[in-house]
Image 1 (cartoon, rainbow, N blue to C red):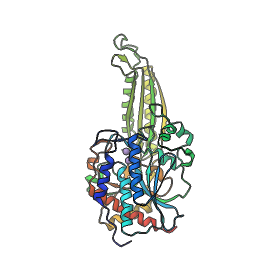
Image 2 (tube, rainbow, N blue to C red):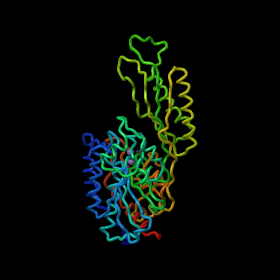
Image 3 (cartoon, rainbow, N blue to C red):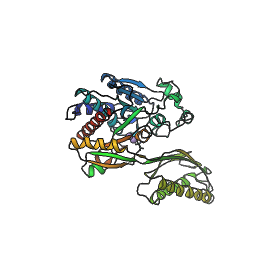
Image 4 (cartoon, rainbow, N blue to C red):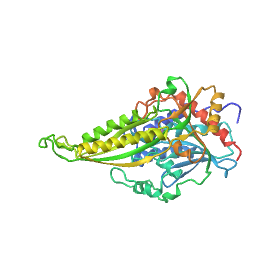
Length: 418
Ligand code: HGY
Ligand code: MN
Ligand code: MN
């Protein structure tokens, strides 16, 4: 490959990002693409067609992860991979995940156009269900690729309507055994994911490229609170066992625990509430909460959880309700691979792009790919750090710059000796 690094077709990349954004369950510009919804399936199809037009060989595994391979001259050597996700939570923007999928494809096309010949194959992965929306657990596809969740736990997953993964994936024509998803050892030699920062630091510091040295460890809990219902007018206040007030106290205890963990990296949110019977003139008897707790350090995350659980016991006793906790997932943090980070930094340097090492507080499929092979992420700025909201925005020049750094990094990794 010439000394210079290939240009990425920024206009085409932006056009594709805009086109994919129109494939949504919501009203554009709002993006929503929940696992195996019609929009999710149409979005996958859109990407598959682009990959086939780029001459990549595409395969789809039993849970819907899509792999688009550019075969190298050493086809049996562990390949170099890149990729991200196209599913999107309700009321999302059009860049989260998409920049890593379409930017990854643009990086491959730039290398192809520059006449680069890969030695190790280069593979673009579109991971299934990075978002937890449907089944409550994030990174389902990459988690399974890494063998980080037992197939029987996956088979037991049910969405809020009671639909099973098997039933939904069957709709998408996916029938192979779930056990076939896990990757063989040494299947990849490295993985690099391009993603928007989903935070304000790069923009504030006017730095175009972030190199992710650590990804915070996410954990999620489903909490069921059972009190006693009754007529909102007839049941007098003394002796009430109002489940929604117990839930409110618990949500405040979750916030307090994050503040008191001893680390600024501890974050916690009670993001999902279901109140039953959810009627204005009925005392709530049941509440289901979902709590998201993360930290770059397991010890302080565990400390925060302990504080939450003891507050929960106290609330249950004081208010005469039962509170049952269920762990959905509790994953360790992941570290960026030093060699891969250095290569990405060196490529950015050659492109006169300043870089900064960072921590990702959002989780990504890289969290699990780091268990499969040496992994790092390339971040680009996003306006005001906005993400998981329609105002999410990343400048086309930053997206193209990130894709160029990715292209150069993939090229270097593809020519690493077996
Ligand atoms: O929630 C996350 O960190 C990711 O964006 N799914
Ligand atoms: Mn997201
Ligand atoms: Mn994402």
